[in-house]
Amino acid sequence: MGKKLNFFKEAVLTAKTSGTITPSSRFLAEKMLKGINFNNINLIVELGSGNGVITKHILDKLQPNNHLICFEINEMFYQELLKIEHPQLTVLNTSAEFLIAEIQKQGFKNVDSIISSLPLSIIPKEISQNILNESYKSLNSNGTYVQFQYTLDYYKKLKKLFGKENVRLKFEALNIPPAFIYKCTKK
Image (cartoon, rainbow, N blue to C red):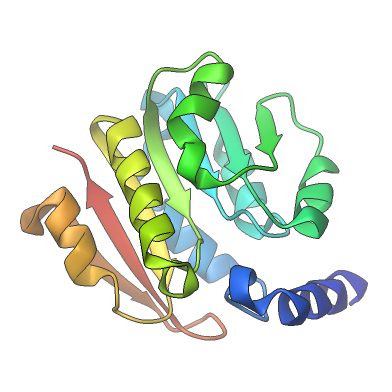
């Protein structure tokens, strides 16, 4: 119960950047990762990792050739993520606006899959657009960008960026609150 209470306290204190007051459910995490072929990827990036709920699901699926880089700007959540000991995990306390430069510092050129829990609707528009542009540019051809949101605000923006036919919408009711999942493929 202590971790959930700590998450709630931190989320309330930082509502403008965390975008939620409850951690993601395992159902949401599983639906976000469904369809990612971990056998054929080198680098997966997680944006807005929070306290690591989805991070742990990703780590459970990693293959020996996979690496996970997490971006988290909230200091308390960043410190929680550092407690996860895994040789294929790198945790960065920096904004996803600098995704390309940061992955290059880690020795990677491109990303195969991005899992994002960033609250795009409450991030200033210029910053959220920069993050989306960095994400798109960083992806390999046929790379995937998976984003969850509590609204449909970003559906049109993602279709414009990735192309209408390359964005699929899913819904997860077993999450508090229920969430929309955008699954985008770079062609």
